[in-house]
Image (cartoon, rainbow, N blue to C red; front, side):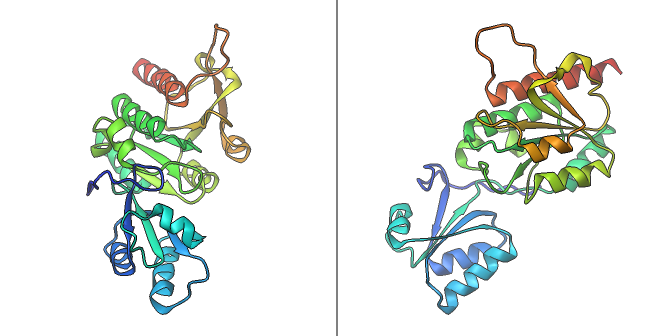
Length: 258
């Protein structure tokens, strides 16, 4: 898998590489550089900008039409020419890469799907955990989620060099497609069945939701199981990355028993 780093340049969230200017943005799209978001001056419809918007739609990039004031806030150079792109710090992979890794290791596929993880530190920590437990890849949605920023790369402690991360348009549709390939799905839910009572062996997808909202209703409805983590203290929830780690190791424990 090809990887390329970006410099940690201040941007929309302080940790994203910002590409400014029409020629630079258009070249980034045409070169295949992964672009998470594109900000375009509202009502700007000239030829070069239309070409950039077409490229963004072709790559299914999140497109935001904003005011000049917003672009000026995002700009580091003051020469944005009406367009600013937020580029990922690492290249995204494909889910097929994950199946190839599982096949090479002669293992049942083990994927981790993240639903609405917006904190880059949580995302980085979960990618690090995925690598350590031997998961074959991580899947994130294009919207309402952190992308592969430099903060994610740092927090993953190098795991991004080894663990593929795929970005998909629709998690529900992705789960449906993966079920056809033999995967069973379990999502973390504080009201779910105790994780020790579930059969989490075999080809599996583990779904972790955001700390605030958990796994979304539509995604949860597609899961075969909901897994609860026993909690004995006064606080009723775990950090998303910690909950993911606990469930990952229950999956590892059950795999080792086979």
